[in-house]
Each structure stands twice: as C-alpha cells, then as structure tokens.
Image 1 (cartoon, rainbow, N blue to C red):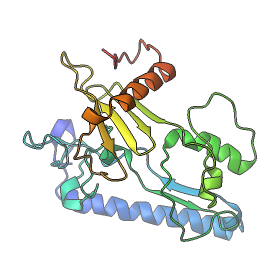
Image 2 (cartoon, rainbow, N blue to C red):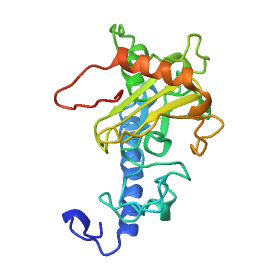
Image 3 (spheres, helix red, strand yellow):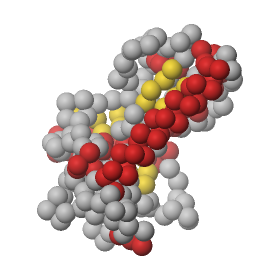
Image 4 (spheres, rainbow, N blue to C red):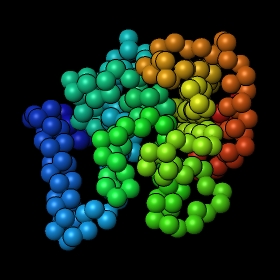
Length: 242
C-alpha cells in the first residue's frame, strides 16, 4: 500500500507484493510436503484457484476500458506486474480481467498431469464437482454444473449451463456467459444504466468488440435467464432490467 484510503503506507509496495506471492508459493509447498509426509499426497485432491481477478485501484479517467490501474486499495500495481495480461477489468468487474483466475488441479490417480482444459467454468461449479469427486450425492437445485468428468479428461456430454454473475457492488453489474457469448450490463445503480453489451469471448477475450447490435436474441435470452435465476433482494437491491 502507498497509504491511499486510510491504509498504512509501505515503502516498497511492488517488492512487498512480489514477496507475498513468493510466500504463497512456499505455503502451498508446505501443504504439499505435509501431505507427502503423511503418506496421503496421491490420495488427496488439491485445487489451487482464486475468487476474483487482480485487486482494483483508481483508474485513469482516460482509461474507460479499465485495463490499467495505479496503486490502489489492494496495493497491486497491475500494470507493472501485467497481472491480467491485457484483459479488460480487474477485481469487481464482470469483464474477463475480473473473472478469469488460475485453476490448477492435482490428483494423480484421477487427473492426468500436464493436461490443459479450456471448458468454461466458474465458482458455482465447484460444489457439484467436488460432490462428484468425493462420491457424494449432488443436491438438486444448485446453480453450478458438475465438471468432474471434464477435469478427468472426458469432454462434456451435456450442454454447458449458462454462467451468471450478479454484482450489486461496483455500480451494479450483471453478466451471463452462454457458450461463446458473454452478455454484460453495467452501471445499474446509476440514473442512466449502461447499455447491454455482447462479446464473443473465444475470438475476443479482451472484449474490445461489442457485438450487441447483431445479437439481440442473445440479449433477450440473457434477460430471460436472469429473470428465472434471480429474485428481488432487500439486502442487495439491483434492478438489472430497468
């Protein structure tokens, strides 16, 4: 931190952040070593991931796409570290920079080492997926989808369920991912909410080309999904369809 927003300043915030990442690596190694010493390493499913993209900071006004930031409330110089590799948005954003996170899975008896899988997923998928991995019956009515077979290397045999994000924070935002398309609406808490935006993520992961004009059916479907999957909430009011 450099002292913004009431935080105690740090004399070398970049070095401190790099040291924290190194410390995280060491702690992951300690957990792995402990499992190995206990003789249960290869019988343990290890998942390494994160809950959101790089911490946001104050953006330059000229940077309307939120691709850079200075030292902010998280103390991360995302530009210096190239934290989101050019993706749009940071923590709290429904753009890819706020949603894409690392995901590493290790379980030698079930998951082949060195494989890469590009099936889209999000945090809601972990509950049913971990139930399947542990042999526990998957409760009905969950938001996520069981992707355990995908992690083990078998292609998904059923359609990928829509992925839904509803953020009453950061000005109010919603997003729905359906196949290759992501439908976004932002600034919902303002007097003039933003327009619906549509991006073809596989072809445009940096979300530079809004193709909403030619995707009215996708917007209509996203609105239908949001109506079915959300309900009014007094604690987090958000009128996404106004």
